[in-house]
Image (tube, rainbow, N blue to C red):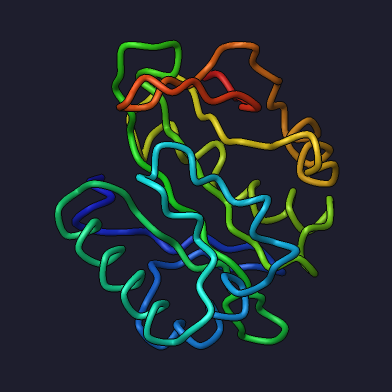
Length: 186
């Protein structure tokens, strides 16, 4: 399956991951303008973007870039939909990363979640939808995601799903070393 030609929808009884669509923009503005959530977003190697968006116009620009990235096979951006409210409460970005560091042949996963969803059980429910399928969707030998020390609920969820902390840095395109990654090996 080519995730860039046929992006799957993944779901359980609580959440659905589906390709982000334009109608998600208003919901996602609540995520990306959430000042409690922004410090937990992974902006490593993102050319200065901190993902703190406070206007619909800026959120639209981000969406337009995400759509272009998907069309060009750079990364997939799924919306995380709460099935009870039918709201997009976050996104997951993932791509296959080949690089000259430890995090090569890796499905690099970025979780951006509204702060009221930054709860261990909810995070585990969301990540359980994508963690194992990532190996086939992105043809990788490991999946990695960032969880800074302040992300205690996220770290609990990752650990529960079998992710382990890595002491290795992810090295950015400019040589910057980024830490606080958790990995799941195939």
